[in-house]
Image (cartoon, rainbow, N blue to C red):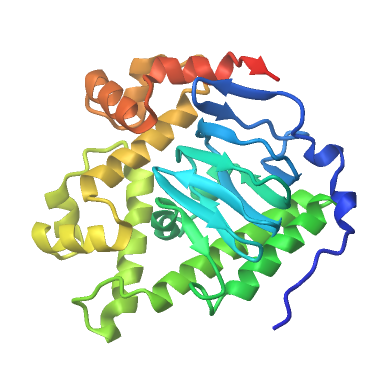
Length: 312
């Protein structure tokens, strides 16, 4: 299949829609992404030669070089992304951007919080724990679909379609579904399970993750959840880790922290109220786990997100 090319001439992409040359909002190492016109999408036709020091943000970031490579260091692993390749950086990942002396690339930034609330997305969530490096060799079956989908998003973003945001969201959902199907069809997720039962296990664990995502505020014990799906806690623990790359306890805490991040945006709620609404048994446990995951306390996180400091 021939690679899809953008409809717009490259210089056309340098418009007010992607002007990142002004100020950025940073708090220590956290960047607050500034979307335009109250959207949840930002696509940047980037030609900068400056590096970006180590930082993180809540947006999903996708790097797609067009000319020359682009370097990205994530958790001490350096990726040299070449034209025609795609690197997906999960939300919350500490990363450094290393630009060459010349070149251009698309940088996509998405707030996927609305997607995370959709039924079934929990099964794809485990794919966004670590960076995804997509090349023709590594994702041969879906490479064309993924690459063309991203380029079509740029056409919509820089075009004049009045429904561009809805169109891009539809493409983004299909993008995630494509990744999810590829993972299920090609990865040996449950190596000890007979091939004929793999699909049933995937469905069972997707339903379980949906359940956790809607009952995170309850007292979810490993024993009770394992029993509810008909496994011993030891067998369940192994299967859960194989499917999600999380232990059961870590996944529940991860989900609760994500809820807490959203609640911290509501100034009328106290930290104690947020801890309880997110399902944490105590304020001390909430503070400890939040700092482990976000490298700051809940109070510091709230202040960083609502009292920005700008610099050139």
